[in-house]
Length: 388
Image (cartoon, rainbow, N blue to C red; front, top):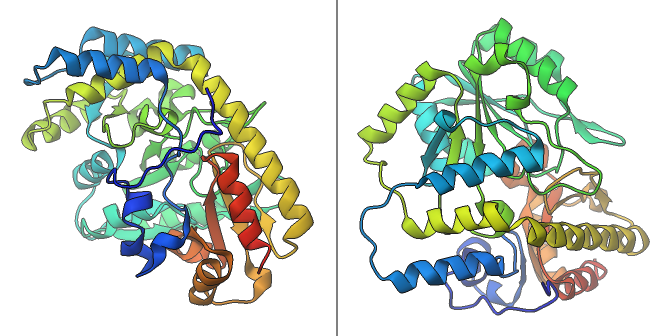
């Protein structure tokens, strides 16, 4: 696979390229988009072939997930992460964020607090606030070496005083790229057990690890915690299928699973996009070699950019990461307000990053860059950043 190939994404309905002015203002089409977390590579050829075959069939009636879908997901989880997934755990819905919203409605009441760890993915805040719940932030601690760590002492204070019914975890963490260790997750779930908190773990980045790193799911841990953990997964982030929306909420507890399935039925979410199902099945079944090539390319993109930044961007401090294709960059040495930083990135560097303040208070003074692109784009971004 030639990941250096430049593919023009204009006029495809791409949020990242075609709708950039909606987020960055008039004239933003001249900027290099480094914001939305999808990548600028074509999806695996095996997926394209599977989609062509399905389209050529020509009939798109009501669709369900065939046994091949479940078999591919279960085999992928076992081979890639040594994780045993039982078919009855799999509850599919059109996208992780819609599923999170349904679970927030199901597992909490209006006015309840829901915990997230900042800096946090902006859609978590939207799901919480627009459903009439309160966002309770447990800020991560900035640490040397690992980048960020959980503040479990502050989390226990939050649990004991606010008594939230629910926590949304991101693992690997967006935007920082932190993969939580088995020990950290065990400590977290011990607190959740003590204070009767259910954890929804967004694990959509799990396949996108840096060399030598491993991923630990909440489902890897002892079965004693299975009654209070839900893991969300999808092929979309891994294989570049974000608009072919289908995700899986893995729910070991039968009671939680039954309530969730009834909630899906109540919203008419019992039919699936035939192309989404076919694409995910093909990706899990045959996409492993392609992903290995992609991970090597992304790792080299990161290594190259970090090396260049160390030489040419003295004001930038890049957060160490274990996963994702995101760069979380501390720009606070520039001594700019968030609004000033945004316009310096646009007017001086000529790029459109994800601005850190969109990830909550802990993101102020930071930017997030997307490394999931041909090296040419990174070179252009670096040249722009060197002008600051």
